[in-house]
Length: 180
Image 1 (tube, helix red, strand yellow):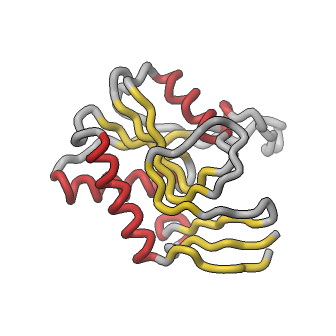
Image 2: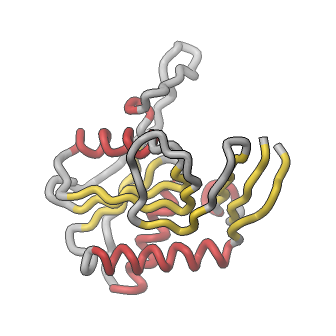
């Protein structure tokens, strides 16, 4: 793969997440009954960053959770030696029933990951509402899903790949476009 451009550096990513936190609070008239749920892997640190931003703005600590959607995917691949799907753990330590759940992920592409995440959340309880926040929306939807909060819209071709790197996972913060 050949790197075409860096579209967000660390300060730009920080500004986008700050704006998203403000938008979440404005749309929901505060943080009451709000839960931020990160979709593994990079959605988790993004949800934690949004939690910190909301704490700075409102002085409220919003609960966060981690969601593994492996078994809910419609394109499930078997990747372990015993021909079973590789599972990561989910951890949502609060009841989602009646709560406003904001799913958080790094890139919105076809919408299939989000569909799987919604199924996983609904299996845990019946939230009053599910919203979606993504750092990058690159287009090319296959399902009728849209994000409520977007850090940056980056129209891409099918030949391009968006790579999000986060300090917590990759020891660097930036978003780049690569060509296949």
